[in-house]
Image: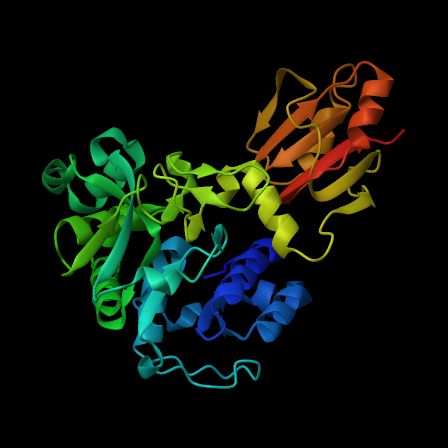
Length: 374
C-alpha cells in the first residue's frame, strides 16, 4: 500500500524490485492524490515498470467503521480482498482483473521504506509463511507489548513476553500460507471489540499474536543476526558505507532492506541509485514565508546551527517554522522542518551561514529547509 507515499520511495521500491525480478506481479494500492492527481511521476513509474495500481477505495471496506482506521490497519483486509479476487478494477490504466491463480509466492511489504538487492522470492524455498524478527523480546519493547495488551489483554501478553518481536513490515510465503495469515489478521480487525484498541502500529501487535499463538501453521522464522531481511531500526544488520549493501552479523548480504530511512547514509545511496531526477526544489517562500528561501525534499544544516530551546514540536506545516524563526530575530537564521518538528538554526557568522546554504543538500522526502533571504 502506498498511501501518501513520496515518489522517491516509490521509485526505490519498484525499480530495485524490477531490477532483480522482471516477471513478478507488483500490485500496489495507491491513494487517489498520489495516483492520479498529485504525481504524474507515480503514474509514469507504474506504467514503465508494469505495476498494477489499484485505487485505494475505502468504500469496499466492511464494517463501515473500518474506513476510519489508520492505513496500517485497514491494509490487511484490502490485501485479503486482492487474494480473494473480489476487486474488479475499472481504471483503464489497470486494464485487467486480478485472480487468485495469478499468485504462487506472495510478498507483503511496506513500500515507503523497502529496497531489494536481489530477487526476494528466492527466500521462499519451501511451503509456509516466512516471518522476520527484530531480535528483541516483547518484554523489552514498550510499543509492541502495549499493542498486544490493549488488543488481546494481559493474559495473552504474559504468555508472549519472552517471545521475540516480529516485524509486520515484511511478510511472505506461498499463496496458501499468506492467505491464511491475512484471514487471521482480518478476523481480528473486523471483530466487534477491536475499535477500542485501534491506532497506528497496532497491526504489529496482532501480527505477533497471530504468529506466536500458532493461528497459522508452518511459520518459518528468520532472525536479524543471520537472516536476509534487514529491519534497520533493530540496528543489528549494518550498512556498508558508500554502497546500497546491508550485511548481517555473519557478513551475508540482505536481500530485502526494510526501514532504510533509519540510516541516512543508506537512504542517500539508494536515492542516488534509483531516483533518476533531481527531487530537490528551491523556491521563494510565500504564505508567511516571504522572507525565506526554501528547499523542498532537501535537508541542509545537518548537525549544525542548533541552539537551546530551538526545537519546536507539534508543527505539521513548514510555514509554522517560518513564523517561529521570525519570532526569534536575535537567534534564528534558518530551519529544517521534519515531520511535525521545526528545528530552528542559528549562525552568527555570515560566512558560516553562506557556506551551509551552498552545501549539497541531503535528499530527504517531505523535509523542508528554509533560510532568511540575504
